[in-house]
Length: 123
Image 1 (cartoon, rainbow, N blue to C red):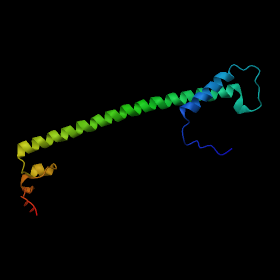
Image 2: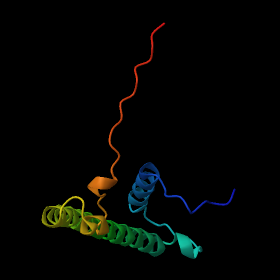
Image 3: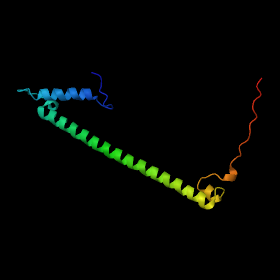
Image 4: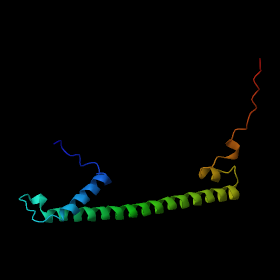
């Protein structure tokens, strides 16, 4: 049997089949084994541990999404506050002031005036 690649997740279909197999196993009477990994207690323990880890993962994903949403909203709030500050600086000091340039705005006098382009002669 080739080595298992445990770096990838099992598909929900495989996990469903495994759960069905465990449920079917629970109906069997008289099962005994010498293998420690295949005892009914070990099977139940592995199943319960899987459920607990999946629940933990789901809870952490929900917390991650909530933290991500909060950070995104804070970023937008900060951005909108900066835009408001730039408008106030432009209104208070003027569009051609050094103060406007200090906050990242381009001075009005530094802008190039548009130039006319000659129309290409059609032949």
